[in-house]
Length: 258
Ligand SMILES: Cc1cc2nc3c(=O)[nH]c(=O)nc-3n(C[C@H](O)[C@H](O)[C@H](O)COP(=O)(O)O)c2cc1C
Image (cartoon, rainbow, N blue to C red):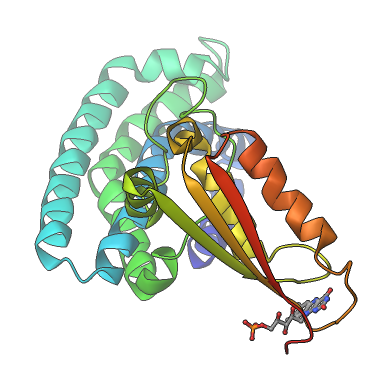
């Protein structure tokens, strides 16, 4: 949030200063420069956002060795990308600026000159973004070690690869595959299973075909004593086991508990 706020403040300041110094052509040029920078910087942003959960996960696990390795690899990746971006910007500045402005116009000439100077900022930008993302990730390390929601990215089903999210689910699913008997327990929340259990089931998406022919035990608790109180929750678990199928499924329902 602070990063976005500072970007907005800098953009307003740039516009004001350039309006005074070079009029509307100056404002148009800086807009082109910032747009072009935005396209290249999105690679840095993508890397920082992508690596943050990996940092959080390993911080939550207190795996210092792994964290050091990730940090060192990240610095190398960012350094290499920064140099490539600087070279690319210097070599193809004309091409990039031409996406937004016609050649030979005043705006094109000003934006081109400005972009060539501005592109030296690529040497620092990636490190700034990464540092900020890393500290945010370290702050919330333990939280990210909790299961993330399935985001339906399709990496597991469409591309037949391991789940794109690197959290505790990797270990949980391995244990589920190795087990002969699986026991799952949930309180009844608003007549259905709790959100965490649903998340766990959704996240088995990457490997549910390997969960066939196991013995399943489901333990359900609810505050109400009505004998139909578990119906929806039982049906929900059955829609999960229907996709496997299991060797057997046993439901243990405890009502009147709170
Ligand atoms: C958000 C929420 C929703 C709940 N919804 C229901 C419900 O719809 N029906 C019910 O009988 N109990 C409901 N309960 C009570 C829980 O099912 C009950 O407290 C739980 O089964 C007790 O087990 P626990 O001590 O393991 O949490 C709800 C509890 C919470 C916190």
